[in-house]
Image 1 (tube, rainbow, N blue to C red):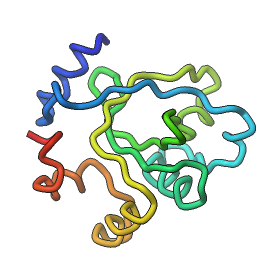
Image 2: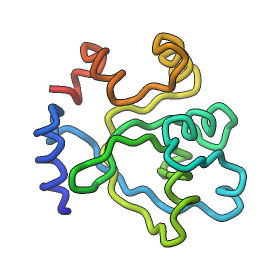
Image 3: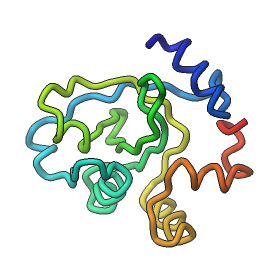
Image 4: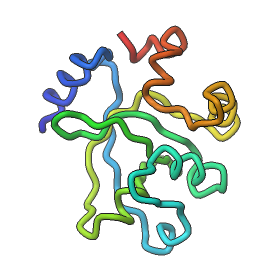
Length: 138
């Protein structure tokens, strides 16, 4: 899907598609991946744990660039974005486009999890806290 189509899908989902930052998720080195939590179909938990244990610097919420877009959590390390969950469970992982709704450092991520009944923040959580995320939520 093109970036313009991705943005249109995000707008249809109730976001400011024209304001959302789109980045490329890249494959991690095999050594880094081997140290990450990467349970299949558990991207929110995996990303949360990876940030707590210092495998990533930020917990990132957003959408994978698929048709339709899929809500998903990844990690940021430096200026790069990684998805240990998909990479560990897909031998042909080559990366993909990702729309960022929010990024959290460890303290903020844990604070939001506490107010979310100890679950890592997800897209539904952002929608419940819409007033705090009106830069991306229409």
